[in-house]
Picture (spheres, rainbow, N blue to C red):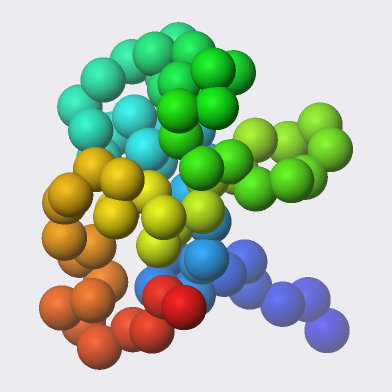
Length: 73
């Protein structure tokens, strides 16, 4: 049985594209922030994933999923 991919509400990490969209910046800028270790990147070899909870704490932006009652930690 094939499972559906996780919905945004179930994700504990953001992709580079999602982070760029949330901050309204380019993906190349997000890659730069990850490379400089400015953004909290999860340790996944070969894949860049940004810790959702730490990302929203770092940006000071309210996680839209918190308003939906989704636990991020």
